[in-house]
Length: 172
Image 1 (cartoon, rainbow, N blue to C red):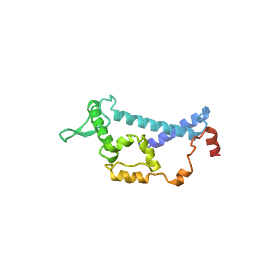
Image 2 (image 1 turned 90 degrees about the vertical axis):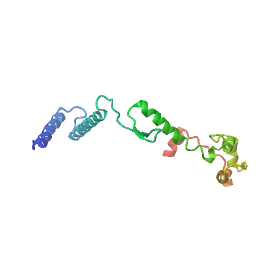
Image 3 (image 1 turned 180 degrees about the vertical axis):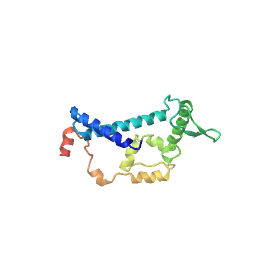
């Protein structure tokens, strides 16, 4: 078996020579054929690895997530029925991290809304917003910093619509 690599190389070289001799499209250069053979070999390796992970019958989980249950004990989640509630609880916990922040306090939400789409947002930019007394001091300081400087206001609004012709002209 010590000569196996040499025999394989000799066989592959004869295969490459035969394919080049046929002269079909895509087989005109030996380098092209060797590159294709290498890609095919890699694809076979990846396929075998995939089947090993899937364990052919796909009854076993590829990943085994671990979650802490109600008794503070780590448990391995093997099935979709146990994974989905654990993932949903984790998502809810992460997405609600901002609930106790100053920007979610009722006094802020009443003036600005959840998306800052109310008149108070424009008042902050214009520098005319008067914060209620019970507003968080750091938010009030932030509002002062968010006022648009007169130098920017003097320039007027920007026309930001770019059409195809303008885009092509800018790239030349």
